[in-house]
Amino acid sequence: MTEELDRYDRLILETLQKRGRITNQELAEAISLSPSPCLRRVKQMEEAGLIDGYVALLNARKLGLHLMAFIEISMDKHTPDRFSAFEDTIAGYPEVLECHLITGQSADYLLKVIVRDMDAYQQFLLQKLTRIEGVSGVHSSFVLKSPINSTALPVS
Amino acid sequence: MTEELDRYDRLILETLQKRGRITNQELAEAISLSPSPCLRRVKQMEEAGLIDGYVALLNARKLGLHLMAFIEISMDKHTPDRFSAFEDTIAGYPEVLECHLITGQSADYLLKVIVRDMDAYQQFLLQKLTRIEGVSGVHSSFVLKSPINSTALPVS
DNA sequence: CTTGAAATACATGCGGC
DNA sequence: GCCGCATGTATTTCAAG
Image (cartoon, rainbow over all chains, first blue to last red; front, side, top):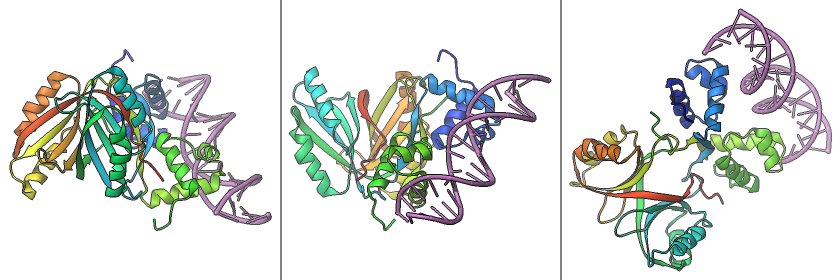
């Protein structure tokens, strides 16, 4: 972890961010290295926590999840217990993909949410989100299109 | 694709969203099914496009990427060529993780951006983002903390 | 780091249920 | 449809150069 990443490490990370299930042999070939040191580097970076894990990415539309939205949320009081209570509740809602505490005058949280349709969204808003203690304001923006939607971090 | 997902399919998808590099044997065991039908189902769902792919998730902090921000962007004119030119330019910037075209009176795009620090952010804003033709306004929100940050879609 | 070999574990197809 | 076995393949891992 105290070591710097060399060219091979960066190539490995870039490749794994695109093809998480690639075999070590293919990976080695792709970066022009032999399998042994390649695997050793991957293991090292996993150990070091550089690689958090591997996941499958699903197709939202094919799953019937047609509505994505970002929701800015304002809290009434800025106390630690208000915030952690909110976060704990939110953590139980599968439609919430992301929850970020953010700077900005108008909002405290930014949520990324995905649901089947407008009905489901309304349900989420009325039955779940606005019923959470401390939520004083919500502002929704619906996603029309996502020309870029990547999980890959710039590695350099 | 016209078929509905049964209990096994859902278990498979949920598992793969958490452990993308799990072997078919382990996966089969985890969902209490034998390897043969398990693999068949996975392959089917890959074919059907339900599974978009597999990726490694990296640790931003360990990579030295300490600053994440959401940027709301307004465009001067709402013409198709303005929008596609913007999207094409943005696509070449590695610090842009996501770009969403959104509804809302104040903004047209919402960007998720990650950089090393404030200096890099300033560089990105001044050298790249605000120099794009048509960008008439930007509003940044910095991420202080992300209690939820998942790629896993609700599957039901 | 590379090469090569050995052991392990895996995916996959087939017959039976 | 699922199970379990058998087979062939691929991968990891270790040793030596």
